[in-house]
Image (tube, rainbow, N blue to C red; front, side):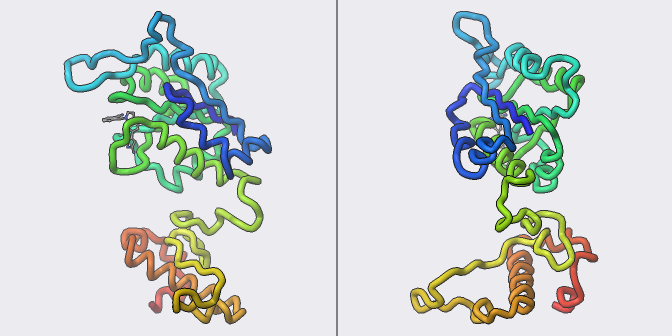
Length: 250
Ligand SMILES: N#Cc1ccccc1Cn1ccc2ccc(-c3cc(N)[nH]n3)cc21
């Protein structure tokens, strides 16, 4: 997967060189390219913003540099397989299902804005050339879209084949598709490691029993318990077929 990120703060995307995503890029699974939006400005001050039409606070990002950037990165006629992602507080929620959908694309272009956002006409013009997703990572307002891009690139990147080692799997992710017996669709339950006793607190004995069927059942019970406590909305949304007989007996 190729990922292009256009921003006025390229240094904000430095974390993508680290850890899981950094290793995936080094392995060639991800081809991540970060671009400075001002590359596509032509005035002496490399202007990317202007005052809002109709008045109001702050500044709005001009459509021209974004359009030139998009056209430079995705020349007309080469849009197949490309999706434009625009982080915004007024977007569709970015969820695990959205991440799974975006993971099927061959090319993602991210347009993290600053100020009060981008002139609407850029999104409208882009939507005539390729699918555009306006996405929110949560019900709070950030100062710009770069942090949202970090979140989305990690959530999407980890789903690509070869990114997670065999030991870790996205198969049973929280929020993923609920599956019979799996944890997908539920929150993660508690995790423990050695020592067996710490601070006078014991690891639940079932986890030391070596009985994998009993351990799996205990973990599913704990995941259901935590989900019911922290996110009852997810329980309601679970596919009934994804709950096994013992779940229903709870
Ligand atoms: N737009 C806008 C805007 C509108 C009002 C006040 C402040 C901003 C700042 N801003 C500029 C770009 C941009 C991108 C994404 C977010 C964003 C996403 C989530 N989930 N929260 N915030 C915010 C962004």
